[in-house]
Length: 292
Ligand code: G1P
Image 1 (cartoon, protein in one colour):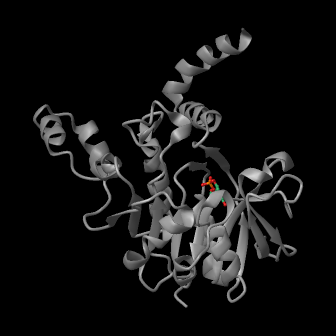
Image 2 (tube, helix red, strand yellow):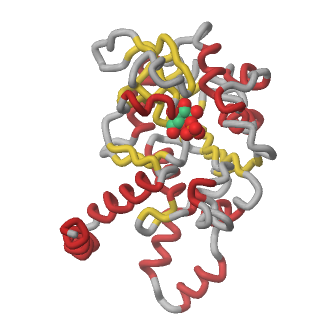
Image 3 (cartoon, protein in one colour):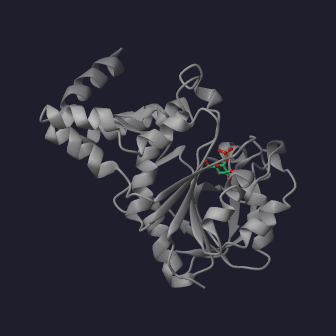
């Protein structure tokens, strides 16, 4: 079994209905947290974990994501002729290497499991990561990098989890686990997608980062619809768990669910406060607002 994770899947086909009208013409993944689109944070997390190739599973009206990771010829030419070196450098630094991205389309919104399955030909027969771009992770060592460390030790499949208040378990995939091992990782012994209130086996939710073995694709191909009438990745993982190990890593860091308005705003404030100059301007504004 390969101990290197080279490829990652980013499902970016979601409609972003919770952010209408902002997401009518702009993909939700392109909404900005301070000065970078959400998807950029997730790509950076993947690259920092050693990922070499990113497969974007897109949908109609998502072409600006592709443009964002390409050369913007006119813009860059203009910046260059005006001597705007810093801005030009910024664009060059964020651009993935030529040939290190692929784009495929999920033609119908059939669920996360189906979106991941759409990447099967590009991933091929090797372990891979999945990063859900709604979740922006802020930590010293990235969430996927924390998982890769566990994967290099134990192999198998790896899921990142975090605690969630019990009254929110119905919004997520929830796992059941064994006692943690010496290094803090643990075996996942069960999982359920969006359990009915009061039925969750724990309050550890799957926070949108996975390392999976390619055998998941064969299961996704025949996966019946599950919670919400969608083809669920969690259901296929549960079946794979009958044949392969699943390890859990309790993520250390902050997670901002940018699929929700509150999480998106919190991410903006958190990243703004990280920038010394911006924080100096934002802090008094926030203090004033909080006083009223
Ligand atoms: C998806 C997964 C779920 C996971 C969640 C994290 O759900 O199916 O298991 O906990 O992402 O954000 P969704 O948010 O697409 O409904």
